[in-house]
Length: 242
Length: 111
Image 1 (cartoon, rainbow over the protein chains, first blue to last red):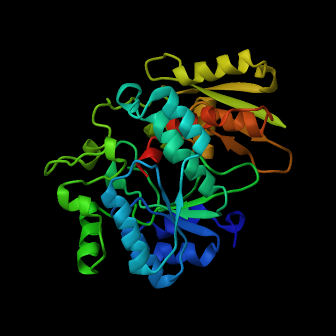
Image 2 (cartoon, one colour; image 1 turned 45 degrees about the horizontal axis):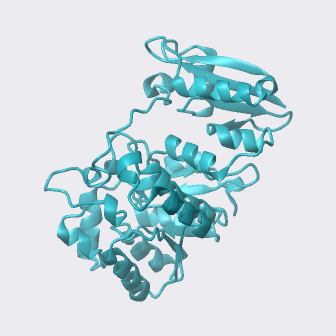
């Protein structure tokens, strides 16, 4: 089945309270051409669940070139543990070389992280998604009360769909808390990134990620030198839903 | 083809900056005459035409574009550069597109 015949809004409502495994099963059953986006962190639980449904599930990771050694080691460990292929998407060499020549290796501490993330992460992500009908992320509502609170378990991906291709995005862990994810990891002996044992909650690139203190929100470990930007283009939700 | 642009008036009555930027770009690139209609989503008035369109199409971002063709479901574009590229067939640099995608999807860089 393709995205055209997949009633995503109806199924999102129907699957809102189902388990991540149920959501994964639906995704795998309906889309042959789909892949899990694996960040090298606790979203490994998606792989653990998915291989029980489809042992050769497609997985990709964004290799920004700036990940921690622990994350590279973990990606390799996951590849061996589950005997799966993980496609590593790298930045475009020409764009990256020009960016580094023009701005150096640490411009994000002055200019903000968006330009670097755009080249190292979002462009390779778009390249990976351009070949797919659906993708699966580990995004959860509890990761950011501001921007992830409304994440549905599945949605049309408006950012990466094109005029002639609808891309569906599955977020099977949307309704799970960090506690539920870690309970699953412990109960099922799922391998995890060593950085978590060193106090890292949210894991990204090495220069832009730091450990957090107990009870500090995981987002405080990322781009801590930047102020939270105000969303200026959102339409007030209360009015929209009226 | 009929194109409607929805721009926002904020709760304090001021125009949305992003909407103003997009209008300026449309004007500078001589694309404004390709927009058939511009309607207002007034956050102070849930029954304003733009707010009704936003509800109807489940859109939570402004500005956005509604592209209608006879006999087909309306297409909604919340990303300006994507709209310009796909509907108006104008050339857009990848950097510009990515920048806007990231602005409109603040969680993408957390992947």
